[in-house]
Length: 495
Image 1 (cartoon, rainbow, N blue to C red):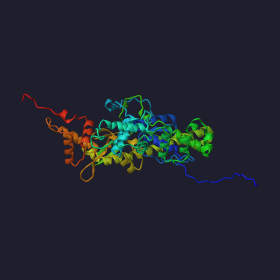
Image 2: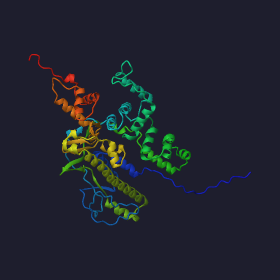
Image 3: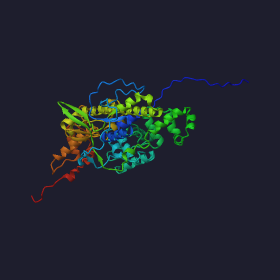
Image 4: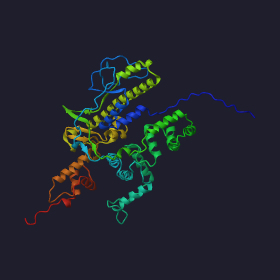
């Protein structure tokens, strides 16, 4: 019987790996920040990173020598060109007295909850009426961390109970439709759409593994990737630092596993965390200014953030690195790389936000010209497809951001509205315009003979807008308009 000869030999294998770089992680972090949050972050970086410094207003860059800093390419990353002949770090005045730039009228009394934020996205989604009702039940059963606490069976029971009050003796609803039986597949389809297309990504997850897996898949990792295998099968081993066992089980080396560990560390285990805040007083800080120049609208960013550049002192210091110790050289190079990354991500952040805001402004031009009645139907999906980003990215950009317009300060997300079909050319009008028309009809009605919901529905139909009676009743309730019987004012009997 021949013996087997076992030998080891090097082997080259070509494979594709998707790694979430530090630059991408930073970009995703910055894209969510409004002006106030970004300023706080940049102020922290000015303290922590000595190679970053704040400059005055932007000046025209002077012609400067080539930055031959080995593999650290600093050219093109100065947001501002200051005096490059300075040899010492620039120190901004941190103790300048200034007046309060946040008046009382700019404060909002209540921070938006996760429930409100998700329902806003739900109203702009393309769910059917049935799926939207299921989605509301799911959203209503989320805890503070953003996890779904109800089981699929409980959601089915909740849906059934919601219809009992409108059921007659024949097992039919008042509108003549029978109560439909919900399948697990229907609920899971709605749940998956909330988890993957709503912001924050991973909301409504049922387990930590499911939450992290959804975020990893959204980044582009595959189901059979080592990252997903670690999340789904070895998360506990990873938390216990049993790295060798995990690496052996997945047939990967420790370096790759440490990269996976870093990626998992940067995922959000509690999607609802940003919405659970103890302090309730917040400021509505203007992020954008909208001006009309001729027949066009122009957008200006709020520049109430530090203008940064890389310190000339440290640029010169790394050039003369022969006189530095290895420890000092490593520290300076690390801080320069971090500074370069921040400046580049700041530019990319502004570019992405500008594309989104400019497209929204272009679509809603009539709104800015003529008022609320001219708000056009607009969904997050519409902007995402035009700009080439995910819906959740558009949601992040428009959430908690405000624009100063000729008609006042508005929240950017208020420019989105669900559409209502018309009877003529198949075009849609915004939900806000329908509400405004209902309000106008009620305002001009006879106080002694007010319009019923059916009357309002027929008036809207004559204006080429199809709205069912029960939908009119729903919008009327949202507008806090009483029913026709309560609006009726009888004449004086003595007359």
